[in-house]
Image (cartoon, rainbow, N blue to C red; front, side, top):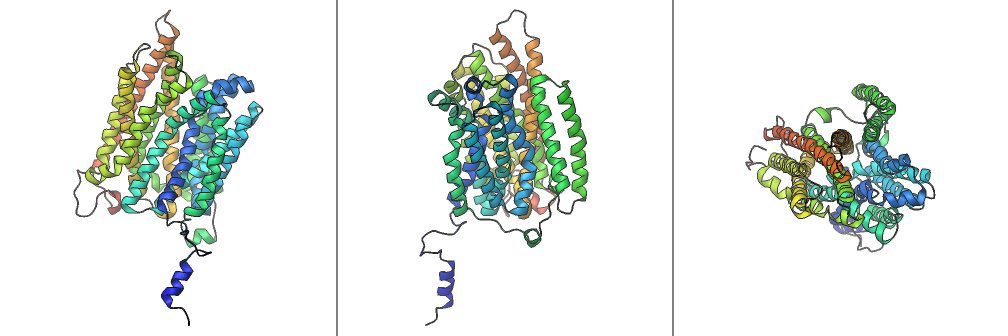
Length: 503
C-alpha cells in the first residue's frame, strides 16, 4: 500500500540510517557551543603568547624584533583581513568559510607548536591570523541566521561573554602551560580542539541560505578587497610599530601614508561596486551605524587593561606567569556574568542604559587604576578596578552587539559582522598605540633617580588615565541610543506594547 503523504514526509525528513541524529540546525545549543568555542580559540591566541614569550625567546634565539612579531603577526593578519573574511562568507557560504578558517587556524597552530626557527613561528602566526579572520565574521553571521528573537539575544550574550573572556583565559592558559609543560603547548593545545570543532560544525551548524543571485553567480569585489585589506593592514602595522618605535619612525610614517591613500580609495571603490565587500550604508545609517562610535571608543579603552596590567604584575610586582594570569580572573568573571545577564537587562530597560552605564563603570575602574602605586595591595587597589571594568564591559558590549546586528539584512550579516569586528580591532590597536605613547612620555618625565618599578608604575598610571577618558567618551557616545529610532527597525529591543526607558 502506498505510504500516506504524512508518512512520506516523515521518511524524507528522517536522517539516513534510521537515524536518531537530527539534521544540522536542530541542535541549537550544540551549534552555539561550536560557534562560541571557535571564537574562544581565536580570542585566546591574542594573548596566550604574552606570558610564554620569554621561554620562546630562549628556545628559538628570538631577536627583539622577532619577539615583537611573534605577538604582532597574528594581530596584523587578523585585523587586516576581517572585512575580507566577512564578505567571503556572505558570497561563498558562511559555514564553508567558518570550517575553512578553523581548519587553517588549527594547521597553523600545529606549525607554530613545532617551529624550529623564528621565521617559521612568525609565518605560522600570520596563518593563524588569516584563519581567525575567516572564522570571526562568520561566527556572528551564523548566530544571526540560527537564532531569532529572544533566543538570538541570549546566544549573542553567550558569544560576547566567551569572546570577552578569551583574552583573559589566554593569559591564564599561557602562564599555566608555559610553567607546567612548554611554551609549545600554548599552540599545540589548539590542534585537538580545532579538529573537534571542524567535525562538529559540519554536523550541527546549518549553512544559511544565500540570495539566488549570490549563489548562482557570485561577483567578487577585487578592487575593494585589495584597497580595504591593504589599507586596514597598513593602519594596524603603523599603530603596532608606533608602539615600539614612535610615530616619527620612517616605516610608521610610510604605513600611515599608505593607509591615508588606500582607505579613501576603498570608500570610493565601494560606492561604485555592484557587490561591495562592505556596503557603506551599514556604517552610516541603521542600527549598526548607531553602535559603532561607542563600540570603537570602548574597545580603544579596554585594550589598555591587559597590556599594561600584565607589565605591572610581572615587572613592578614580580608576579610569576601563572600568578599574573590568575590576577585577571576577576575581570573575566565580571564580564562573563554581566554578558549573560544582558538579555534580561535589555528586556527591561532597553539597550541604552546598559551601554551607557557599562561604559561609565569601565571608566570608573580605569580611573581607579590610574591611581595605582608600585606597592599597593592587589585586593584594595586592583581587584575593585578589575571587577568594575569587567562588569562594565559585559553590561555594555553584548547589548551593543545585539542591537547593531538586529537591523542588518540576513544576507549582509557577514559583512556587517566583519565591519563591527574590524571597528573594534582597529580602535583597540590605534588606542593601544596612543596609550603606549602616553606611557612613554610619562616614563621619561618620571622623577630623576626613581626606581625602575616606580617609573613603570608612573607610566602605567598615566596610560590608564588616558584610557579612562576614552571610556567616558564611550558612555557619552552611547547617549544617542536613548532617542527613539526614525525607522521601525531602529529600536529592535522595544517589543510592541511594552514601554522602555527611552532606549
